[in-house]
Image (cartoon, rainbow, N blue to C red; front, top):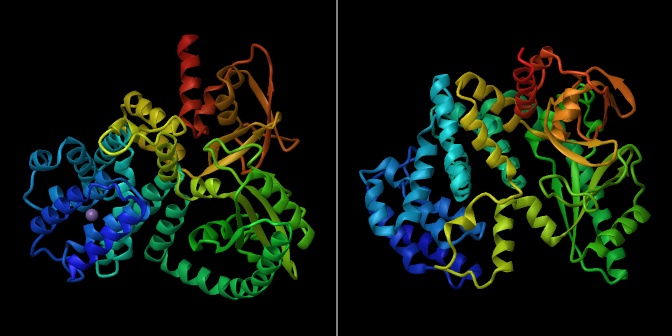
Amino acid sequence: MTSKVFQKLLLKIRKYNAQADFELIKKAFEFAAYAHQGQKRISGEDFINHPLAVADILANWKLDSVSIAAGLLHDVVEDTEVKKEEIEKIFGKEIANLVDGVTKVDKTKFFGSKEDEFAESLRKMILIMAKDMRVPVIKLADRYHNLQTLYPLSKEKQQRIAQETIDIYAPLAERLSMEKMRGELEDLAFPYIYPQEYQWVLAYSRPYFEKAGRHIKKIKQRLLEALAEEGIKAKIDDRRKHLYSLYLKLCRPEVDKNINKIYDLITLRIILNTVEECYAALRIVHKICKPFPLLGIRDWIARPKPNGYRSIHTNIFVSDGQIAEIQIRTWEMHKQAENGIIAYWHYSQQKTPRLTRGQRNVSFFAPPAELSWVKELVKWQKEITDSKEFIKYLKSDFLKSRIFVFSSQGDVYDLPEGATPIDFAYALHSQLGNEAVGARVNGTMVRLNHSLKNGDVVEIIRKKGASPSKNWLNFVVTYLAKRRIEEYFKKVGK
Ligand code: MN
């Protein structure tokens, strides 16, 4: 049985990488199968099925042979007698370091542990990540499979793992721009943490999804025909909004549990070959369906999000006031939007085709410049020695969902949810933060501790020679703003 699954895995790998190191992968599988021999999962199935499933997820992401081998071996050090040194002797340093990294992250219980231990765990994870981004990616695959097989565990364990997923791993996937993974992790964890709320959203949204689904089918067909008439080849996907993210949106005060105020319950994704075709598709969409005026067109191709996200978004009337979202993008943008860092590896690989097996060094998997937050985190990790404070800023900044706000010049900035105009000002420039005396959001004066929202246009009112207030430290949520304010007071000696 097991070997059949393994043969299937090899076939899958061969399809995307005929050059893969099959010897290595076989050796890793045999070693893991031997080490885990006799071990069972709580469900009663053989333990080896779990590392096999993790390797399969990594193969779905078309990862390199070393990652696949590390996926197969990822629980060997944690759950058997095998030591890291042995892995290193047999499989080399690279794989040993990956397994060790995943093991260390694994050992860290983020919940139920004391604050110091919790902070220590996060510090470790950050340092490991800064060296090799494959560690968090393997860890996400591990977590994804664990969540799929969570049902036989005790209630307590289910809740701990699910909560950890919502608080740490889903945000981590978001920061790695692995949007698809984030949505799936959240939806798997959701029923374990909020069972009643989950049932409520499920039942409440069902008729709306069904109704919208019928109309969307027709719209999709008409769009495909209209595109074909202009000689444009396109693929159109329709996606239901993930339930957990729907639940969070329904809970927002401005939505007030009214599903008619959710404009992206269903999203049509039009995927094309070129950027020109994207704009042609936008014209065709608006010819066929009435655009919903409230949100307008968001052109993230002309002006990508800071994390590199590109796509054109618009919303259309589906029927009797029901609204759907349309996202228009090329295949490259699509892969980047769904798989983030993994798509980045694929494209870098294609750009340097001669960098094949053996020649590719570990630095290939170091955090790319686009993920500047990894460097930022390493800095925090050094600077914030107090555990309480470290956790506070990880929670309010790094692990928070991101919003995108605009300067009055139209530049876009990425901030954590709950960020204030002062956080925004410091994100632009430290002098602007120091001299801020007021703020306008979408043309209206707001207080300096006002919570910014996605899509806000923010203008900071500045007075030369003004200075920050210590009170700001009570409401800023970004570590950057806090550090700049403290630096100011240190400099003036107060
Ligand atoms: Mn595992």
